[in-house]
Image (tube, rainbow, N blue to C red):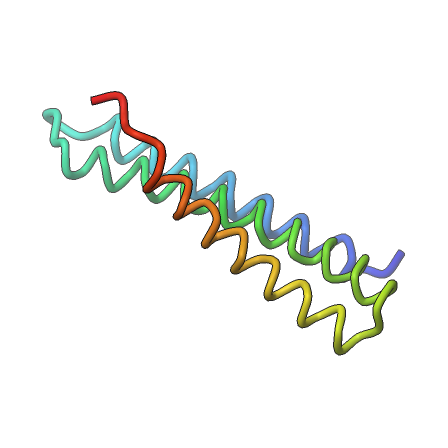
Length: 100
């Protein structure tokens, strides 16, 4: 295994953990309950964790699909599938009624 194969995932995980810790520290040490600050902090920490998960999944999917269908078609299928998944989640979110 090469150094960059270990270093990149390690740095991504470290960044996600630090962002989560920083976001929660901002919310914890606030003098009074500020809903805007709390929303921002939770959104920041959640967004970073989701981003790190997507980066890892996207890379694995791209490796699998390029091995099966070649570098060009595999990459296209990876990107199209990623955005089709986003579109599908958006459609489901619109169609399913909220609890409120």
